[in-house]
Length: 365
Image (cartoon, rainbow, N blue to C red):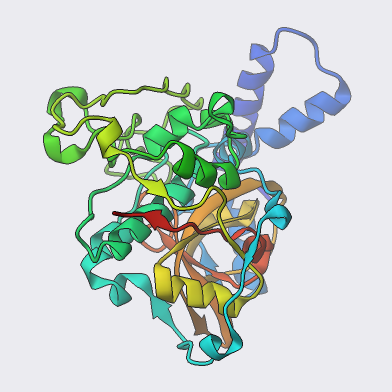
């Protein structure tokens, strides 16, 4: 059931995309295009979600892609969901799993690193979540292991641009990537410092070696502090061996941060995952994204309605229980205007999230 605005948006986008195709489409291709050009956020889906359950709230005003299509949403779900079964499982002795608290938030537990752990990033118009989830977790772990001394933001741009086939990563920049090989990249190549986008003329030494290449953008509401996101995903930046920020004083190779081991660890139980986060800090994770997730506003997300869009990588920073349901507390990379100030809660195990939780240990002298 469309609103008049949604109907106009759908047919306008469908006609625009159809006219851009050079060749006539088959009936199956037309049907696929029609589905891809549906609005990413629809009042009917929001109403259905909110009427079927009371764990979480969906909202058209909060939707990640106000005015965008499902095809746009799919382009940002850039994580390949496979391969963890080949990794070594990290096992904690049973006696170490008995005193796990009912709730935990790494921002509170590791106060010296709360600004790093709680920093909300924005992947912008790029399917780079596979890089963000890993870099955010690694960044937090570097800070925690150093006792808060190494608290500079690390560069998702470095991983996005350089973790590619040439560096033995199964990743393709803004077109998607593999979280496992992003962790291996941290061991073989390391990443330099750098936080969010800063115009080159405004860069300062404090912005790090390689700030993110793309600006925060308005994926979300009718009113936003940011300019609208580009309709098409950005081209992947070129890999570099020198700091794009000329004002940064440390040489590129001396600025790299590494992991101790080539491969990340996986975990066989929720207790082991919790113990790992309590002990060493946040982990990366990946899960299947469905249409209803785009409109998440608050509460504990559980897939309720809508089709599969793709894989998405994030950072898990804690857990808890709400309305009798156990959840993971998660940092997203869709800026602070999305969800619960850039975070969300998800039912443990929902959408396959427990199967793609990974972590590595920083190598710190």
